[in-house]
Length: 306
Image 1: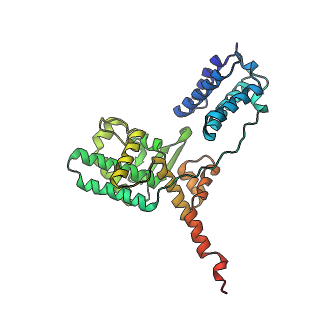
Image 2: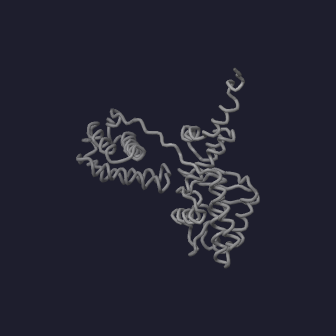
Image 3: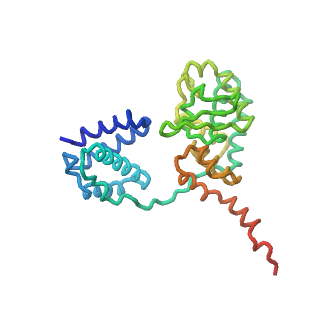
């Protein structure tokens, strides 16, 4: 019998071996589909009706935020498309279900430039105060992490996954492996950032070679995303910054400030590794200071005099 219990693992294997999806996506699909399996009373996929799926979607909207609900619905939709393509089902019940809904627009939070400057200033002061070799290694790594997050706009997961061979400081570029195993190259445009990366690499060469990853912890293991979050909290406290800063806010700030500097949004899309321009367009809502500057200095009303 074609049950969810047997078909879901087959689908996950298909996604892994044929669609070549990354581990995070596979994990999300697996969690979403197992939840669907537990919520559906039908023993066979042939017994699943549009009404059954609508009840599941209704439950998602009650228990989760719109973004999470949307992801889970997409997982189920992709699964039924697979069943249809494999002729396991003749009629796809998802085709008769309305899955689109209005999501509230959540604007990305950015870090004010003066706050970023204060944050980095405190870090560089700590570098001068480092009294031991270990302290120096740690502060060099921490500065390199923050400088790279802000200068490239890469995701924290991409930064923590960087290998030594991904960073070419001679050509001043970085090879990034993004979502869906998509590769992109991004230039490091600031010589000070290149300099701190070079200094970190020189001081921590043995740790990097032993670990295999560019950013390492005290155990010579890959630096974790949580360690980066903890590190940001540490320096925020030292700098007396009240704002709660997350790694992703450096990415948001990177995109917003480039947009405010009149950089074409399609260049920003490419640098961020967004698959669709629609995702990048969220930053057009954030660039309010640029809008204020335009309307204050460019609007023809400025020429009126009464």
